Each structure stands twice: as C-alpha cells, then as structure tokens.
Image (cartoon, helix red, strand yellow):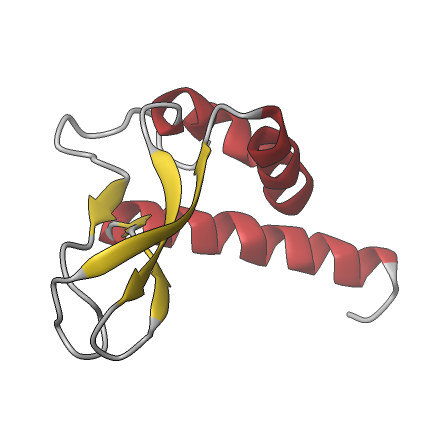
Amino acid sequence: MWVKELPTNFKMLTKRISCPCCKGVKLKKKYSLEYKDQKMLSFLNNYYGKNIKDYLNKLKNYQYNIKECFDCSTIFQEFVPDNAFGYELYKISYQKKIVLKKKLNMI
C-alpha cells in the first residue's frame, strides 16, 4: 500500500447526484454490480495487481453503478474516486505500466 494508514476521512468514492455534463438530476440506473462480486474483484486484481488488495475491503461497501441522464442521455459512473483515492489508483496503475515496459525492454 502506498500510504501507511488511511486518514479517517478517506471515503474512497464520491457519489455523483447529478449528471456531470448537464447537471440534470433525473437519472436512471443502467447497470449495477457490487464491488465484492467475484467478477469485479477479478477485474480489479488483474488491472491493478497486488497493490489494490489493501483497498478491496473498503470498496466492498460500494456499488459500481452506471447511470443515464434523462435530459442529455449521458452515461456515467455514479461513484467515482475522491481525490485521495484517485491519486492512489494513478500511482498503482503508473507503477504497473513501468514494470510492464521494463519487462518488454521499452525503457
């Protein structure tokens, strides 16, 4: 894990209550999957590698929801990483890309 201990106000995901494009509030759920679902866990482990394991326990309290705006038809993710978690995800994925490039002798 990148930080020794998560701050107490570390929420991980922030809920969007309106459309990120038009700010409309009439939304329809298009898809939903719990983060503790095996399909989601498999994806996260494959994409982020071992570093994501430290966060999976906290993610289990969230749903991966895709919403559609009735006003402009934009489709978006309802819960998105907050700034702190987004930064952690970036570091994890960046590190994984560097390792892959080294394995492929691209660096």
